[in-house]
Length: 607
Image (tube, rainbow, N blue to C red; front, side):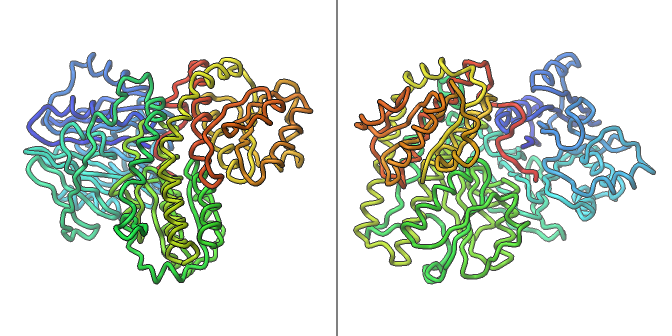
């Protein structure tokens, strides 16, 4: 959620920090601040957008210095105000701290610190600055370790001190942190895109590690102070991939990029023998063969991708699947053991609820596979294996291309499980892989619905409520359609299993209420038609998403959006496109910020 950028080198730090923060705006934030060292440490911070901070910096004459750090805050403790914005200082004004995450025991710490320190904000972060102040005995990294030993929670911290003006110290406990390696300069950030204009060589900081960043060196240690070797990675995608490329919004750009993203996710997944060969699973096939149950843990859009995976895994691998919202998983005491497989789905690889869920699963001896878009992310590093979705950077807060690539990757994994377990013949696996490779072209054709969808958006942009219904794999598609609409247009939208309408939700249907029905070709299509007739009989205006060539449905609904014929197990990948466009156009007509919806953040790194 919060964005972090730090710089140490020969150049002026402030422009580099501000540019990095701009590239992290997609994460969502409500205040911003910077600290620059030049003899003293000077802090400027403001509630609101980065433009507010930049205006304040201009009025103050700017900040000069070649070491500094910046932060965009998404409020957790204390309102989004100037005082609560980061960085925070200790009593002496020597130590500055920025922070991503939550310090869970901050109330107890604050109560103790308030007796001997002046606390100016309502935040948990300020407590850390005073703990470091107390612990400092000539070694900043050691003081950070001593402070962290007193903290409970999930966080990344970045610290500077006038007592050691050549170094920035960072520490990672659950929340993301990366180091960018430069020539005569080095940097820290919460996400790779912040630093891509300065370097392509990065060191992901792992759990429980402390990093000391100087202009000419980077040292990584564990929480005991023992040195850890650097493990740099090279980033191949360029900065332009994270820009709008001529589109009005990142969201529209990313919707249009979905065919390419799916192709990239499917590419090079088959070995010379024709068998699936998936990334870096690191789990021997003989262990996969012993699996007798699969759990899928995810949040938000990734949860909907997991629902789609449930149908595929049960059908192809003949394994029972439980799908669980990550934030609930470990609190219900799930029955896990060495014969279970847990799939953690997270586009960022830093979603704290999913990260904690896979940690719980591993503690119970379950095998864990991560499905993520981010190389070197926490979930990727902590899982037994990882399957990457090659969607590239996604700047819009509302997931689009990462959703379709999660589904594609999970379909590959379901086929792989069937292959290993022998529940699919090789010819069947190959036929399904060919069907997967047909998806990008079908998604491209679905994108051709844009004008028709925009016209429907004009009609329904001022609706108070919109319902989405579906059956079988149409149900998770309906859930995702409703989520997209509500999160970017702020219209009340709900997705339902169509068969559940008569058990309560049909009470919401009255004359003129729009109902979007996922009615593509599948084995429950006749039942779906009956559900459509039920809502039509009560006055609903029905928009059907149907299979090309289906003339029967025209007489039953008000509007039809035709998508290419696709097998029902794979159809959500295609069906989701007009639903994304519908949400996008309605939000634009209502004047909403589709890239940064209110109250939302791209990467949720707090519980």
